[in-house]
Amino acid sequence: MNNESFFSSWFDYAASRTDLIQEGVLTHLLYVVLVVTSATIFAVTVAVLTRRNRFFKELSLAITSVFLTIPSLALFTIFIPIVGLGFTPSFIALFLYSLLPILRNTITGLESIDPNILDSARGMGYTRNQILFKIEFPLAWPVILAGIRVAAMLTVGIAAIATLVAGGGIGDFIKSGLARLPLPNSLEAIWTGVLLSIILAFAIDSFLRILKRISTSKGIL
Amino acid sequence: MSDVLIKLENIEKSYTPGEPAAVRNLNLEVMRGEVLVLVGPSGCGKSTTLRLINRLIEPTKGKIYLNGEDVTDINGSQLRRRIGYVIQQVGLFPHKTIAENIATVPKLLGWKKEEIDKRVDELLEVVSMDPEVFKDRYPKELSGGQAQRVGVARALAANPDVLLMDEPFGAIDPITRDRLQNEFLRLQQDLKKTIVFVTHDIDEAIKMGDRIAILREGSEIAQLDTPENILTEPADDFVESFLGSGAILKGLTLKKVRDIQLQPITTLKAPVLRDKAIQSINENNDSFAILLDHNDHPLRWLDERALNRTNQPIEKSGRPIAVFIQPEDTLQDALSAMLQSSVGMSVVVDRRGKYLGCCTIESLAKLLVHESPVK
Image 1: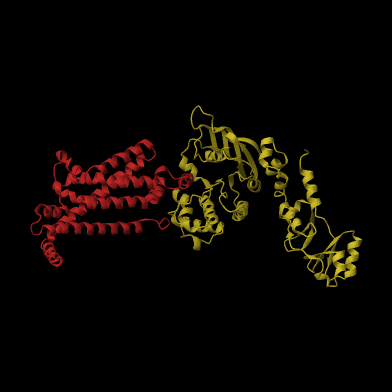
Image 2 (image 1 turned 135 degrees about the vertical axis):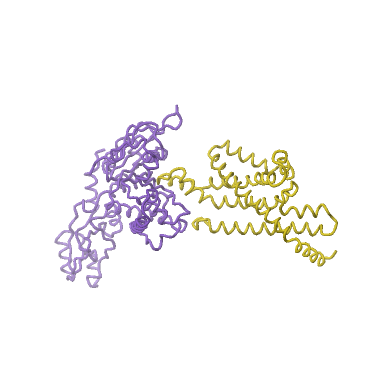
Protein backbone atom coordinates (compact mmCIF):
# COMPACT_ATOMS: atom_id res chain seq x y z
CA MET A 1 0.00 0.00 0.00
CA ASN A 2 1.65 3.24 -1.04
CA ASN A 3 0.98 6.59 0.59
CA GLU A 4 -0.71 8.25 -2.31
CA SER A 5 -3.33 5.59 -2.72
CA PHE A 6 -3.93 5.54 1.06
CA PHE A 7 -4.54 9.25 1.06
CA SER A 8 -7.01 9.05 -1.79
CA SER A 9 -8.83 6.11 -0.26
CA TRP A 10 -8.94 7.92 3.11
CA PHE A 11 -10.31 10.97 1.35
CA ASP A 12 -13.01 8.86 -0.31
CA TYR A 13 -13.84 7.30 3.05
CA ALA A 14 -14.17 10.64 4.79
CA ALA A 15 -16.01 12.36 1.95
CA SER A 16 -18.70 9.70 1.85
CA ARG A 17 -19.32 9.94 5.60
CA THR A 18 -19.61 13.66 6.29
CA ASP A 19 -22.84 13.14 8.21
CA LEU A 20 -21.19 10.60 10.54
CA ILE A 21 -18.17 12.85 10.96
CA GLN A 22 -20.36 15.80 11.77
CA GLU A 23 -22.28 13.82 14.34
CA GLY A 24 -19.13 12.41 15.92
CA VAL A 25 -17.48 15.82 16.16
CA LEU A 26 -20.59 17.44 17.62
CA THR A 27 -20.97 14.73 20.27
CA HIS A 28 -17.29 15.06 21.11
CA LEU A 29 -17.57 18.84 21.35
CA LEU A 30 -20.64 18.48 23.55
CA TYR A 31 -18.63 16.30 25.96
CA VAL A 32 -15.86 18.88 26.14
CA VAL A 33 -18.18 21.84 26.67
CA LEU A 34 -20.40 20.17 29.27
CA VAL A 35 -17.58 18.43 31.11
CA VAL A 36 -15.26 21.45 31.27
CA THR A 37 -18.06 23.83 32.28
CA SER A 38 -19.42 21.64 35.05
CA ALA A 39 -15.98 20.59 36.27
CA THR A 40 -14.89 24.25 36.40
CA ILE A 41 -17.90 25.26 38.47
CA PHE A 42 -17.46 22.30 40.79
CA ALA A 43 -13.68 22.47 41.18
CA VAL A 44 -13.57 26.25 41.69
CA THR A 45 -16.28 25.97 44.34
CA VAL A 46 -14.39 23.20 46.12
CA ALA A 47 -11.15 25.20 45.91
CA VAL A 48 -12.77 28.29 47.43
CA LEU A 49 -14.40 26.29 50.21
CA THR A 50 -11.40 24.17 51.19
CA ARG A 51 -8.39 26.45 50.59
CA ARG A 52 -8.27 27.90 54.09
CA ASN A 53 -8.35 24.53 55.79
CA ARG A 54 -5.18 22.58 55.28
CA PHE A 55 -6.78 19.19 55.87
CA PHE A 56 -9.71 19.60 53.51
CA LYS A 57 -7.53 21.21 50.88
CA GLU A 58 -5.12 18.27 50.83
CA LEU A 59 -8.03 15.82 50.98
CA SER A 60 -9.75 17.31 47.94
CA LEU A 61 -6.48 17.31 46.01
CA ALA A 62 -5.80 13.69 47.02
CA ILE A 63 -9.24 12.48 45.96
CA THR A 64 -9.12 14.20 42.57
CA SER A 65 -5.60 12.85 42.03
CA VAL A 66 -6.88 9.33 42.62
CA PHE A 67 -9.46 9.79 39.85
CA LEU A 68 -6.72 10.61 37.42
CA THR A 69 -4.82 7.42 38.24
CA ILE A 70 -7.76 5.10 37.51
CA PRO A 71 -7.34 3.59 34.00
CA SER A 72 -9.82 5.24 31.67
CA LEU A 73 -11.30 1.96 30.49
CA ALA A 74 -12.21 1.12 34.08
CA LEU A 75 -13.55 4.54 35.02
CA PHE A 76 -15.85 4.60 31.98
CA THR A 77 -17.28 1.19 32.78
CA ILE A 78 -17.71 1.17 36.56
CA PHE A 79 -20.70 3.53 36.39
CA ILE A 80 -22.62 1.43 33.89
CA PRO A 81 -24.41 -0.64 36.57
CA ILE A 82 -25.74 2.57 38.12
CA VAL A 83 -26.46 4.83 35.15
CA GLY A 84 -26.55 2.45 32.19
CA LEU A 85 -24.78 2.81 28.85
CA GLY A 86 -24.33 5.84 26.64
CA PHE A 87 -23.70 9.49 27.40
CA THR A 88 -24.01 9.48 31.20
CA PRO A 89 -21.21 7.10 32.26
CA SER A 90 -18.88 8.82 29.80
CA PHE A 91 -19.81 12.25 31.14
CA ILE A 92 -19.18 11.16 34.73
CA ALA A 93 -15.79 9.67 33.92
CA LEU A 94 -14.63 12.72 31.96
CA PHE A 95 -15.94 15.05 34.67
CA LEU A 96 -13.91 13.22 37.33
CA TYR A 97 -10.77 13.37 35.18
CA SER A 98 -11.15 17.11 34.64
CA LEU A 99 -11.34 18.03 38.30
CA LEU A 100 -7.67 17.81 39.30
CA PRO A 101 -6.11 20.29 36.85
CA ILE A 102 -8.79 22.89 37.54
CA LEU A 103 -8.80 22.37 41.30
CA ARG A 104 -5.02 22.41 41.53
CA ASN A 105 -4.68 25.57 39.46
CA THR A 106 -7.48 27.38 41.24
CA ILE A 107 -5.86 26.75 44.61
CA THR A 108 -2.44 27.74 43.29
CA GLY A 109 -3.85 30.85 41.63
CA LEU A 110 -5.66 32.01 44.74
CA GLU A 111 -2.72 31.26 47.02
CA SER A 112 -0.19 33.08 44.88
CA ILE A 113 -1.93 36.45 45.26
CA ASP A 114 0.24 38.95 47.15
CA PRO A 115 -1.23 39.08 50.69
CA ASN A 116 -0.64 42.84 50.78
CA ILE A 117 -3.18 43.27 47.99
CA LEU A 118 -5.75 41.40 50.04
CA ASP A 119 -4.81 43.38 53.14
CA SER A 120 -5.31 46.68 51.39
CA ALA A 121 -8.58 45.44 49.85
CA ARG A 122 -9.86 44.60 53.31
CA GLY A 123 -8.55 47.89 54.64
CA MET A 124 -10.47 49.77 51.94
CA GLY A 125 -13.69 48.15 53.15
CA TYR A 126 -14.27 45.33 50.69
CA THR A 127 -16.38 42.52 52.14
CA ARG A 128 -15.19 38.93 51.97
CA ASN A 129 -17.33 38.18 48.90
CA GLN A 130 -16.30 41.39 47.17
CA ILE A 131 -12.67 40.45 47.71
CA LEU A 132 -13.31 37.00 46.22
CA PHE A 133 -15.13 38.22 43.11
CA LYS A 134 -13.49 41.58 42.47
CA ILE A 135 -9.92 40.88 43.55
CA GLU A 136 -9.09 37.21 43.94
CA PHE A 137 -10.84 35.68 40.92
CA PRO A 138 -9.66 38.33 38.46
CA LEU A 139 -6.09 37.98 39.72
CA ALA A 140 -6.13 34.16 39.77
CA TRP A 141 -7.99 33.95 36.47
CA PRO A 142 -5.00 33.34 34.13
CA VAL A 143 -3.87 30.44 36.33
CA ILE A 144 -7.38 29.00 36.61
CA LEU A 145 -7.79 29.28 32.85
CA ALA A 146 -4.52 27.40 32.33
CA GLY A 147 -6.03 24.56 34.39
CA ILE A 148 -9.19 24.70 32.30
CA ARG A 149 -7.09 24.40 29.16
CA VAL A 150 -5.36 21.28 30.47
CA ALA A 151 -8.74 19.81 31.41
CA ALA A 152 -10.13 20.57 27.93
CA MET A 153 -7.20 18.88 26.18
CA LEU A 154 -7.48 15.91 28.49
CA THR A 155 -11.19 15.62 27.73
CA VAL A 156 -10.71 15.79 23.96
CA GLY A 157 -8.26 12.88 24.15
CA ILE A 158 -10.01 10.66 26.67
CA ALA A 159 -13.53 11.24 25.27
CA ALA A 160 -12.51 8.86 22.48
CA ILE A 161 -13.05 6.06 25.02
CA ALA A 162 -16.75 6.95 25.26
CA THR A 163 -17.42 4.83 22.21
CA LEU A 164 -16.73 1.70 24.27
CA VAL A 165 -19.72 2.44 26.51
CA ALA A 166 -21.86 3.47 23.54
CA GLY A 167 -21.26 7.14 24.27
CA GLY A 168 -20.53 8.14 20.67
CA GLY A 169 -18.05 10.80 19.61
CA ILE A 170 -14.96 10.64 17.47
CA GLY A 171 -13.96 7.38 19.15
CA ASP A 172 -16.57 5.61 17.01
CA PHE A 173 -14.28 5.79 13.99
CA ILE A 174 -11.28 4.43 15.89
CA LYS A 175 -13.28 1.59 17.41
CA SER A 176 -14.85 0.50 14.12
CA GLY A 177 -11.50 0.62 12.38
CA LEU A 178 -9.85 -1.37 15.14
CA ALA A 179 -12.58 -4.00 15.07
CA ARG A 180 -12.26 -4.54 11.33
CA LEU A 181 -8.46 -4.52 10.96
CA PRO A 182 -7.06 -5.34 8.44
CA LEU A 183 -10.17 -5.18 6.28
CA PRO A 184 -10.58 -2.33 3.73
CA ASN A 185 -11.34 1.07 5.19
CA SER A 186 -10.24 0.02 8.68
CA LEU A 187 -7.04 2.12 8.74
CA GLU A 188 -8.90 4.94 7.04
CA ALA A 189 -11.43 4.94 9.88
CA ILE A 190 -8.70 5.00 12.56
CA TRP A 191 -6.94 7.90 10.86
CA THR A 192 -10.20 9.79 10.60
CA GLY A 193 -10.60 9.52 14.36
CA VAL A 194 -7.04 10.57 15.05
CA LEU A 195 -7.11 13.58 12.72
CA LEU A 196 -10.47 14.79 13.99
CA SER A 197 -9.19 14.62 17.58
CA ILE A 198 -6.14 16.68 16.72
CA ILE A 199 -8.14 19.28 14.80
CA LEU A 200 -10.71 19.55 17.58
CA ALA A 201 -8.01 19.87 20.25
CA PHE A 202 -6.28 22.58 18.25
CA ALA A 203 -9.52 24.49 17.71
CA ILE A 204 -10.49 24.39 21.37
CA ASP A 205 -7.00 25.40 22.46
CA SER A 206 -7.05 28.38 20.11
CA PHE A 207 -10.44 29.39 21.43
CA LEU A 208 -9.22 29.27 25.04
CA ARG A 209 -6.09 31.20 24.15
CA ILE A 210 -8.19 33.98 22.66
CA LEU A 211 -10.53 33.82 25.65
CA LYS A 212 -7.55 34.32 27.95
CA ARG A 213 -6.41 37.38 26.05
CA ILE A 214 -9.77 39.10 26.06
CA SER A 215 -10.81 38.11 29.58
CA THR A 216 -7.59 38.92 31.48
CA SER A 217 -6.84 42.45 32.67
CA LYS A 218 -4.04 44.13 30.75
CA GLY A 219 -2.49 44.95 34.10
CA ILE A 220 -1.55 41.33 34.78
CA LEU A 221 -0.99 39.95 31.27
CA MET B 1 -10.14 72.06 67.10
CA SER B 2 -8.46 69.88 69.65
CA ASP B 3 -11.23 67.41 70.32
CA VAL B 4 -10.65 63.69 70.42
CA LEU B 5 -11.45 61.96 67.11
CA ILE B 6 -10.20 58.45 67.78
CA LYS B 7 -10.24 56.88 71.17
CA LEU B 8 -9.01 53.43 72.11
CA GLU B 9 -10.21 52.44 75.56
CA ASN B 10 -8.72 49.56 77.55
CA ILE B 11 -7.98 47.64 74.37
CA GLU B 12 -6.65 44.14 74.74
CA LYS B 13 -5.79 41.66 72.01
CA SER B 14 -4.80 38.09 72.65
CA TYR B 15 -4.51 35.55 69.86
CA THR B 16 -4.55 32.36 71.88
CA PRO B 17 -6.32 32.24 75.22
CA GLY B 18 -3.92 31.60 78.07
CA GLU B 19 -0.89 33.11 76.38
CA PRO B 20 0.23 36.65 77.17
CA ALA B 21 -1.78 39.20 75.20
CA ALA B 22 -0.20 40.87 72.18
CA VAL B 23 -1.74 44.17 73.25
CA ARG B 24 -2.39 44.82 76.91
CA ASN B 25 -4.73 47.47 78.19
CA LEU B 26 -4.04 50.11 75.56
CA ASN B 27 -5.50 53.58 75.95
CA LEU B 28 -4.90 56.08 73.20
CA GLU B 29 -6.52 59.31 72.13
CA VAL B 30 -5.95 60.91 68.75
CA MET B 31 -6.91 64.55 68.38
CA ARG B 32 -8.73 65.87 65.34
CA GLY B 33 -6.32 67.18 62.72
CA GLU B 34 -3.11 65.91 64.27
CA VAL B 35 -0.48 63.53 62.98
CA LEU B 36 0.15 60.97 65.68
CA VAL B 37 3.16 58.78 65.00
CA LEU B 38 3.44 55.34 66.55
CA VAL B 39 7.07 54.40 66.71
CA GLY B 40 8.95 51.60 68.39
CA PRO B 41 11.25 48.66 67.83
CA SER B 42 10.02 45.89 65.54
CA GLY B 43 7.60 43.54 67.21
CA CYS B 44 6.34 46.14 69.69
CA GLY B 45 2.85 45.94 68.21
CA LYS B 46 2.68 49.33 66.50
CA SER B 47 1.14 47.88 63.31
CA THR B 48 -1.25 45.82 65.43
CA THR B 49 -2.30 48.99 67.22
CA LEU B 50 -2.94 50.70 63.90
CA ARG B 51 -4.97 47.78 62.59
CA LEU B 52 -7.05 47.73 65.75
CA ILE B 53 -8.31 51.22 64.90
CA ASN B 54 -10.00 50.12 61.63
CA ARG B 55 -10.64 46.68 63.12
CA LEU B 56 -8.59 44.75 60.57
CA ILE B 57 -7.65 43.13 63.86
CA GLU B 58 -10.60 42.73 66.18
CA PRO B 59 -9.87 43.59 69.81
CA THR B 60 -10.52 40.91 72.39
CA LYS B 61 -11.57 43.50 74.95
CA GLY B 62 -12.09 47.21 75.09
CA LYS B 63 -13.87 49.91 73.12
CA ILE B 64 -13.03 51.90 70.02
CA TYR B 65 -14.61 55.32 69.48
CA LEU B 66 -14.56 57.28 66.25
CA ASN B 67 -15.79 60.85 66.56
CA GLY B 68 -17.57 59.94 69.77
CA GLU B 69 -19.37 56.98 68.21
CA ASP B 70 -18.75 53.52 69.60
CA VAL B 71 -17.57 51.56 66.54
CA THR B 72 -16.42 48.44 68.37
CA ASP B 73 -19.31 46.33 67.13
CA ILE B 74 -20.52 47.99 63.93
CA ASN B 75 -19.97 46.33 60.53
CA GLY B 76 -16.20 46.24 59.95
CA SER B 77 -16.33 46.80 56.18
CA GLN B 78 -18.61 49.82 56.59
CA LEU B 79 -16.24 51.22 59.21
CA ARG B 80 -13.17 50.76 57.01
CA ARG B 81 -14.80 52.66 54.13
CA ARG B 82 -14.79 55.71 56.42
CA ILE B 83 -11.07 55.41 57.19
CA GLY B 84 -8.22 55.84 54.71
CA TYR B 85 -5.60 53.10 54.80
CA VAL B 86 -2.09 53.14 53.32
CA ILE B 87 0.44 50.34 53.73
CA GLN B 88 4.15 50.06 53.04
CA GLN B 89 3.75 47.62 50.16
CA VAL B 90 1.08 49.96 48.73
CA GLY B 91 -1.15 47.02 47.72
CA LEU B 92 -2.50 48.60 44.55
CA PHE B 93 -4.79 46.22 42.67
CA PRO B 94 -2.66 45.14 39.70
CA HIS B 95 -5.62 44.25 37.47
CA LYS B 96 -7.19 47.68 37.83
CA THR B 97 -6.08 50.93 36.24
CA ILE B 98 -4.82 53.80 38.36
CA ALA B 99 -8.21 55.51 38.01
CA GLU B 100 -10.05 52.33 39.05
CA ASN B 101 -7.71 51.89 42.01
CA ILE B 102 -8.36 55.41 43.26
CA ALA B 103 -12.09 54.97 42.67
CA THR B 104 -12.23 51.92 44.95
CA VAL B 105 -13.91 53.37 48.03
CA PRO B 106 -16.17 55.89 46.24
CA LYS B 107 -17.41 52.98 44.14
CA LEU B 108 -18.04 50.87 47.24
CA LEU B 109 -19.97 53.81 48.67
CA GLY B 110 -22.07 54.04 45.51
CA TRP B 111 -20.99 57.41 44.17
CA LYS B 112 -22.16 58.44 40.69
CA LYS B 113 -19.78 57.82 37.83
CA GLU B 114 -19.29 61.51 36.97
CA GLU B 115 -18.55 62.31 40.60
CA ILE B 116 -15.99 59.51 40.75
CA ASP B 117 -14.28 60.62 37.52
CA LYS B 118 -14.03 64.16 38.78
CA ARG B 119 -12.66 63.03 42.13
CA VAL B 120 -10.03 60.79 40.49
CA ASP B 121 -8.69 63.66 38.38
CA GLU B 122 -8.69 65.94 41.38
CA LEU B 123 -6.77 63.47 43.52
CA LEU B 124 -4.15 62.75 40.88
CA GLU B 125 -3.54 66.51 40.71
CA VAL B 126 -3.26 66.61 44.50
CA VAL B 127 -0.48 64.02 44.48
CA SER B 128 1.23 65.80 41.55
CA MET B 129 0.50 63.26 38.84
CA ASP B 130 -0.97 64.26 35.49
CA PRO B 131 -4.39 62.56 35.20
CA GLU B 132 -4.20 62.39 31.42
CA VAL B 133 -0.91 60.53 31.60
CA PHE B 134 -1.60 58.17 34.47
CA LYS B 135 -5.35 57.53 34.67
CA ASP B 136 -5.41 54.58 32.31
CA ARG B 137 -2.09 53.06 33.27
CA TYR B 138 -1.72 49.92 35.35
CA PRO B 139 0.21 49.72 38.64
CA LYS B 140 3.02 47.69 37.04
CA GLU B 141 3.86 50.73 34.92
CA LEU B 142 4.58 52.93 37.97
CA SER B 143 7.77 53.52 39.94
CA GLY B 144 7.76 52.88 43.68
CA GLY B 145 7.31 56.55 44.49
CA GLN B 146 4.48 56.96 41.98
CA ALA B 147 2.75 53.84 43.29
CA GLN B 148 2.82 55.20 46.84
CA ARG B 149 1.42 58.53 45.62
CA VAL B 150 -1.47 56.61 44.07
CA GLY B 151 -1.79 54.67 47.33
CA VAL B 152 -2.22 57.95 49.21
CA ALA B 153 -4.67 59.25 46.59
CA ARG B 154 -6.69 56.05 46.89
CA ALA B 155 -6.82 56.40 50.67
CA LEU B 156 -8.03 60.00 50.35
CA ALA B 157 -10.61 59.21 47.67
CA ALA B 158 -13.79 59.26 49.74
CA ASN B 159 -12.49 62.17 51.80
CA PRO B 160 -12.18 60.30 55.10
CA ASP B 161 -11.48 62.23 58.31
CA VAL B 162 -8.97 59.64 59.39
CA LEU B 163 -5.95 58.26 57.57
CA LEU B 164 -4.05 55.24 58.85
CA MET B 165 -0.58 54.87 57.39
CA ASP B 166 1.58 51.81 58.06
CA GLU B 167 5.19 52.70 57.18
CA PRO B 168 3.99 54.32 53.96
CA PHE B 169 7.41 55.49 52.86
CA GLY B 170 9.38 52.55 54.25
CA ALA B 171 10.08 50.74 50.99
CA ILE B 172 11.12 53.81 49.00
CA ASP B 173 14.67 54.99 48.32
CA PRO B 174 15.92 57.74 50.69
CA ILE B 175 15.81 60.59 48.19
CA THR B 176 12.28 59.86 46.98
CA ARG B 177 11.21 59.20 50.56
CA ASP B 178 12.39 62.64 51.65
CA ARG B 179 10.51 64.23 48.78
CA LEU B 180 7.33 62.28 49.50
CA GLN B 181 7.53 63.17 53.19
CA ASN B 182 7.81 66.86 52.36
CA GLU B 183 4.99 66.67 49.82
CA PHE B 184 2.90 64.87 52.35
CA LEU B 185 3.51 67.44 55.07
CA ARG B 186 2.57 70.19 52.64
CA LEU B 187 -0.57 68.28 51.69
CA GLN B 188 -1.49 67.79 55.33
CA GLN B 189 -1.29 71.55 55.95
CA ASP B 190 -4.22 71.96 53.55
CA LEU B 191 -6.12 68.76 54.30
CA LYS B 192 -5.84 68.74 58.11
CA LYS B 193 -6.66 65.05 58.26
CA THR B 194 -6.36 63.08 61.44
CA ILE B 195 -3.49 60.75 60.76
CA VAL B 196 -2.08 57.81 62.65
CA PHE B 197 1.30 57.01 61.17
CA VAL B 198 3.39 53.94 61.98
CA THR B 199 7.14 53.90 61.48
CA HIS B 200 10.19 52.27 63.02
CA ASP B 201 12.34 55.23 62.06
CA ILE B 202 12.62 57.80 64.85
CA ASP B 203 13.85 60.46 62.43
CA GLU B 204 10.75 60.03 60.31
CA ALA B 205 8.63 60.15 63.46
CA ILE B 206 10.21 63.45 64.52
CA LYS B 207 9.78 64.89 61.07
CA MET B 208 6.17 63.83 60.48
CA GLY B 209 4.60 63.83 63.92
CA ASP B 210 2.66 66.50 65.78
CA ARG B 211 2.80 64.02 68.63
CA ILE B 212 4.77 60.82 68.95
CA ALA B 213 3.86 57.71 70.89
CA ILE B 214 6.90 55.57 71.61
CA LEU B 215 5.78 52.00 72.12
CA ARG B 216 7.51 49.11 73.79
CA GLU B 217 6.55 45.47 73.72
CA GLY B 218 2.85 44.70 74.04
CA SER B 219 1.94 48.11 72.58
CA GLU B 220 2.63 49.71 75.93
CA ILE B 221 3.06 53.45 75.51
CA ALA B 222 6.43 54.41 76.95
CA GLN B 223 5.96 58.10 76.21
CA LEU B 224 3.42 60.15 74.30
CA ASP B 225 4.30 63.77 73.71
CA THR B 226 5.39 66.31 71.15
CA PRO B 227 8.69 65.60 69.39
CA GLU B 228 10.32 68.54 71.19
CA ASN B 229 9.37 67.30 74.61
CA ILE B 230 10.38 63.72 73.86
CA LEU B 231 13.77 64.83 72.60
CA THR B 232 14.43 67.17 75.49
CA GLU B 233 12.85 65.10 78.23
CA PRO B 234 12.80 61.38 77.49
CA ALA B 235 10.55 59.68 80.02
CA ASP B 236 12.83 56.77 80.82
CA ASP B 237 15.86 54.75 79.76
CA PHE B 238 13.90 52.87 77.12
CA VAL B 239 12.88 56.06 75.35
CA GLU B 240 16.34 57.51 75.70
CA SER B 241 18.00 54.47 74.19
CA PHE B 242 15.41 54.35 71.43
CA LEU B 243 16.10 57.97 70.55
CA GLY B 244 19.75 57.08 70.24
CA SER B 245 22.78 59.25 70.80
CA GLY B 246 21.91 61.87 68.22
CA ALA B 247 18.87 63.24 70.01
CA ILE B 248 20.24 66.78 70.09
CA LEU B 249 21.09 66.67 66.41
CA LYS B 250 17.62 65.31 65.68
CA GLY B 251 16.22 68.26 67.58
CA LEU B 252 17.77 70.53 64.97
CA THR B 253 15.19 69.43 62.44
CA LEU B 254 12.43 70.74 64.67
CA LYS B 255 13.69 74.30 64.93
CA LYS B 256 13.68 76.85 62.19
CA VAL B 257 16.34 79.38 61.43
CA ARG B 258 13.91 82.13 62.40
CA ASP B 259 13.88 80.76 65.96
CA ILE B 260 17.43 81.86 66.61
CA GLN B 261 19.03 85.24 66.92
CA LEU B 262 20.95 86.11 63.79
CA GLN B 263 24.43 87.50 64.16
CA PRO B 264 25.05 90.83 62.45
CA ILE B 265 28.22 90.89 60.38
CA THR B 266 29.92 93.81 58.73
CA THR B 267 28.41 94.33 55.32
CA LEU B 268 29.86 96.25 52.47
CA LYS B 269 27.83 97.42 49.60
CA ALA B 270 29.42 97.08 46.18
CA PRO B 271 30.96 99.01 44.64
CA VAL B 272 33.31 99.84 47.49
CA LEU B 273 36.93 100.91 47.61
CA ARG B 274 39.50 98.48 48.89
CA ASP B 275 40.83 100.74 51.62
CA LYS B 276 37.36 101.56 52.78
CA ALA B 277 36.57 97.89 52.99
CA ILE B 278 39.62 97.08 55.08
CA GLN B 279 38.91 99.99 57.28
CA SER B 280 35.38 99.00 58.10
CA ILE B 281 36.40 95.39 58.81
CA ASN B 282 38.93 96.66 61.29
CA GLU B 283 36.60 99.16 62.81
CA ASN B 284 33.98 96.58 63.58
CA ASN B 285 36.57 94.21 64.96
CA ASP B 286 35.31 91.45 62.69
CA SER B 287 37.46 89.11 60.72
CA PHE B 288 35.04 89.01 57.79
CA ALA B 289 32.67 91.14 55.92
CA ILE B 290 29.97 90.22 53.48
CA LEU B 291 29.88 91.96 50.16
CA LEU B 292 26.37 92.81 49.01
CA ASP B 293 25.31 93.90 45.56
CA HIS B 294 23.09 96.91 44.96
CA ASN B 295 19.99 94.78 45.70
CA ASP B 296 21.37 93.66 49.08
CA HIS B 297 21.99 90.17 47.70
CA PRO B 298 25.07 88.71 49.41
CA LEU B 299 27.90 87.98 46.98
CA ARG B 300 31.21 87.12 48.66
CA TRP B 301 33.05 86.68 51.93
CA LEU B 302 35.78 89.28 52.27
CA ASP B 303 38.61 89.29 54.76
CA GLU B 304 41.59 91.53 55.20
CA ARG B 305 44.08 89.05 53.91
CA ALA B 306 42.16 88.35 50.74
CA LEU B 307 41.78 92.04 50.16
CA ASN B 308 45.50 92.69 50.57
CA ARG B 309 46.58 89.72 48.53
CA THR B 310 45.37 90.69 45.07
CA ASN B 311 44.79 93.73 43.04
CA GLN B 312 41.71 92.30 41.49
CA PRO B 313 38.51 94.29 41.65
CA ILE B 314 36.79 93.86 44.98
CA GLU B 315 33.95 91.90 43.37
CA LYS B 316 36.47 89.16 42.54
CA SER B 317 38.40 88.94 45.83
CA GLY B 318 37.51 86.83 48.82
CA ARG B 319 35.40 83.74 48.39
CA PRO B 320 32.00 83.31 46.84
CA ILE B 321 29.09 82.46 49.11
CA ALA B 322 27.84 79.12 47.84
CA VAL B 323 24.90 78.26 50.09
CA PHE B 324 22.15 80.46 51.40
CA ILE B 325 19.49 79.53 53.90
CA GLN B 326 16.13 81.07 54.59
CA PRO B 327 14.26 81.67 57.85
CA GLU B 328 11.91 78.76 57.06
CA ASP B 329 14.77 76.27 56.80
CA THR B 330 15.54 73.98 59.69
CA LEU B 331 18.54 74.41 61.93
CA GLN B 332 19.85 71.19 60.46
CA ASP B 333 19.99 72.91 57.08
CA ALA B 334 21.74 75.83 58.77
CA LEU B 335 24.30 73.52 60.32
CA SER B 336 25.11 71.82 57.07
CA ALA B 337 25.40 75.21 55.36
CA MET B 338 27.88 76.26 58.04
CA LEU B 339 29.96 73.17 57.53
CA GLN B 340 30.05 73.83 53.80
CA SER B 341 30.93 77.48 54.13
CA SER B 342 34.55 78.57 54.15
CA VAL B 343 34.13 80.70 57.25
CA GLY B 344 31.93 78.46 59.41
CA MET B 345 28.85 80.65 59.13
CA SER B 346 25.74 80.41 57.06
CA VAL B 347 24.17 83.40 55.40
CA VAL B 348 20.47 83.90 55.88
CA VAL B 349 18.50 85.64 53.17
CA ASP B 350 14.83 86.32 52.76
CA ARG B 351 12.67 84.89 50.05
CA ARG B 352 13.84 87.43 47.51
CA GLY B 353 17.46 86.81 48.32
CA LYS B 354 18.02 89.91 50.49
CA TYR B 355 20.60 89.63 53.24
CA LEU B 356 19.14 89.19 56.73
CA GLY B 357 22.04 88.11 58.88
CA CYS B 358 24.35 85.25 59.70
CA CYS B 359 23.89 82.08 61.60
CA THR B 360 26.88 80.92 63.60
CA ILE B 361 27.74 77.80 65.50
CA GLU B 362 27.62 79.85 68.72
CA SER B 363 24.03 80.89 68.13
CA LEU B 364 23.09 77.26 67.50
CA ALA B 365 24.89 76.07 70.58
CA LYS B 366 23.26 78.76 72.72
CA LEU B 367 19.82 77.56 71.65
CA LEU B 368 20.62 73.90 72.23
CA VAL B 369 22.25 74.40 75.61
CA HIS B 370 19.36 76.52 76.66
CA GLU B 371 16.83 73.90 75.56
CA SER B 372 18.55 70.73 76.70
CA PRO B 373 17.84 69.33 80.11
CA VAL B 374 20.62 69.43 82.64
CA LYS B 375 22.25 66.06 82.78
